[in-house]
Length: 75
Length: 306
Image (cartoon, rainbow over all chains, first blue to last red; front, side):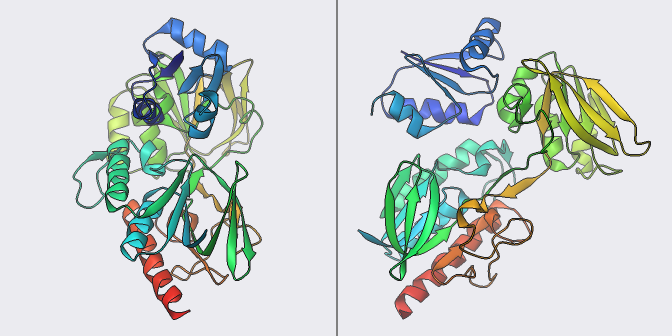
């Protein structure tokens, strides 16, 4: 299960989502600027508030880092 | 496998170099954390020639398409180069995943990153209210109070990113006047949300789990003052990512790689550099692209002469 926490304007969020699309990984997106519950979840999981934060089966990745995403996906 | 050329960096300079190297049929590898570079966080770009107005992400996509359309360049994405070592008349390039690559010559095009304040609390609260990418994180300041450190253009880009969200925005400038273009200042002032404090030396970021305020010195009176706020956006310029070339080529007192501006050669034979990592006077996408092209043409001549 892949979750991505984003804001509307964040370019690295777009890059991360584009990457998931490219490699055929489904994800659920939460916009933390709009959704207060998601914002609390983001802080609880990553102990910070910057975006994007990606949750891959419990592995938390702060920022768009392809190598870490690949590792978490077991690629 | 011995490459003719390894390009380090995938911003405008790195991509331009890749396209030219491929057209010159150089056996080329491009290593980058991700294609795009700084334009990605620039929001909208209105001065890249041929594009009236384009978002950083769109420009990055066009760069990527052009590089793939041209073909002929091996690409290693998601890697950060940590070391460049001279070896047997060429170079050994090591990446953060333990892989290494051999090449005859190197082009360093790793750009620059936002400069840090280097004050107490900055590192502790990074991502917890201290931000360097306003287009990414400004929406987190909805109905909150934010400060932008730096009254230049990049500071005012952050102010404009914050305007739709923050309830109040302080701009703290170290000097006695703002350097941002008047057109940005007017737009910010018209909102009624912006308070400018000049002659302000930011001393400390304050908070508990997250940022709650900052301490600055009023440089006129010498007095220390505090502001209560929720976010600090640092926009005091950029520093060259020249760390990987330390002890390899000449780097000037501002941390920039010194190049010959006719050829983009560095102090070490076989190593070229282009774009914002160098001591070029003006940090512009157009210029980074042009300098990278210059470098590859010079590399092509050099390899043919050898």
